View 1 (cartoon, one colour):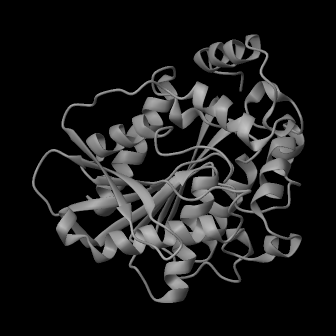
View 2 (cartoon, helix red, strand yellow):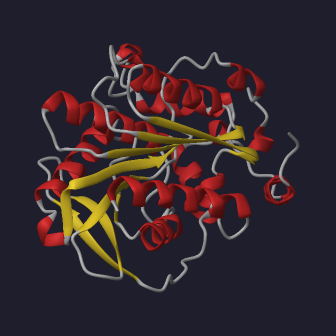
Length: 310
């Protein structure tokens, strides 16, 4: 399908700014560029926000808690931002988290995990697991139901959410009731048709060359690519994982691996729903101010959360 007209307008604006691709920058420069792209903070009625710190032997993990109007106990979503494990923070995904909390009626806990290359695998994944366990252990004090906890995220955050479900299954908890995987990175092998289609063109926000750069910064050694907590598609089995909604974008190098992972979940007995959004690129979920399709995707994700943990 052709590009969505609203998506094309966004891409044309980015192209006119003549910014270098991620893989052409240092992590510090890429972080500064990502910060400049962040959406302005929007006040969402009926959602209260509180910043907390999760204790951890490696240092406190900042989290931002979005609580909808009403009385608990609420279902809760532990949310992991994207950015290739190198970029991003809880401020970058503030607006989608506000909207998800309001539309789903669930508490959203956004996690500011440590970033690579300063903190390579498994540090970000372990931070995300610790945050999910902390929420489970403290659910009652946060007006949440520990039996109704989901994990989710975009891109690298989708990778981390999938990894946390594997860690929770393998380690005997916490109990995860649902996973929301938004164009997740699931494997290091960048050999799919969509990776070939978007190999080096910077116009579509993310390219295979960018993903090479992100993976090289995240993994401590090539051998880590075989570890299922780094690459969830490497897991020997996906049996016993929670139900999933996987959202992909047509113009995205990660499209095919996300869709293959959703199919594998289904084939191994995990309830799995896949929705591809046509005409949009990687990163679209975070653009509800510009894209109607982003609004629809957030509404679809919120509806799935209401059904699973609401």
